[in-house]
Image (cartoon, rainbow, N blue to C red; front, side):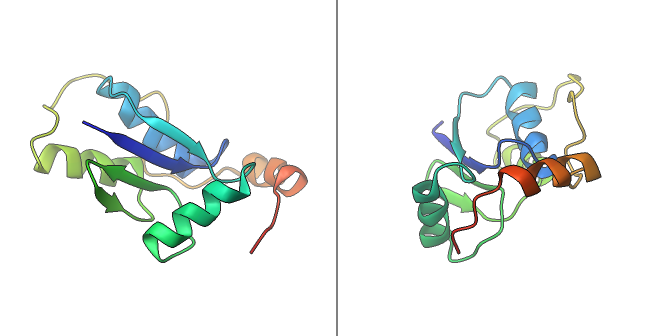
Amino acid sequence: MKIKCYLKPSCGWSNGVRAIMKKYALAYEDVDIINVPANYAEMVERTGQRLSPCVEIDGEMLADVSGAEVEQYLLAKGLVQTNDVAPTVPTNAPCTDAEHEKMKVKTIRFF
């Protein structure tokens, strides 16, 4: 399975996607859309929208999804089997106030 995840380095939604990848021990490409403007531009071009996370699984793009939605997709398509591994972070939660404050200092705006 080829998985490419367009994620922020620190974000509740992005960390939820990472937690699902870890839960199922899935290899994936973690594409930084904050510190690399070309990655963000690629995500927007490929999805037609500006919200993240976006996850491409074997050519199928899931735009603006949570970790919980990615997990539902993987299970529905039979790409993974249910397991009892608990994710290390919430899989369907926004950034915390502390994460938002951190991003205000570091975020590069290019749109």
